[in-house]
Length: 119
Image 1: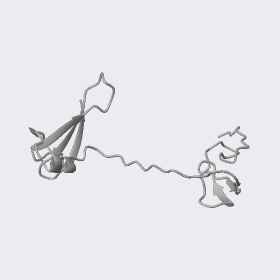
Image 2 (image 1 turned 90 degrees about the vertical axis):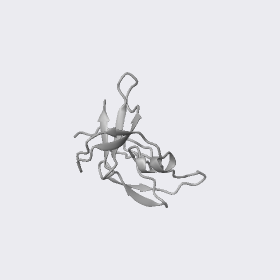
Image 3 (image 1 turned 30 degrees about the vertical axis):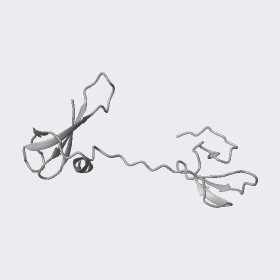
Image 4 (image 1 turned 90 degrees about the horizontal axis):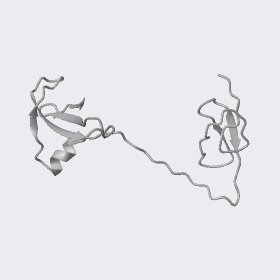
């Protein structure tokens, strides 16, 4: 891998250009997550420095909470691959582009396993 990047900005790795993690205190050495090079972060005077983190969790139709709130999901014939039970509730959602079919989320009534069917 050839790296042909040079940066003088202290927020980026001077070798590969990756954004450097912001340390909690300064001065402190930080390591680039891509190339592993260590860089010294100096103190900044007269600059407002803050850090914002957003943590996202990927979830699939959480039917347990939906059942508590609504309590009347439709029951359909769907064989569970885990326990073999043939009844499940379902919910649909448009997860892809509009010209493609909806995604169907099945939840087994016996073991609560969740299956996804892309139609």
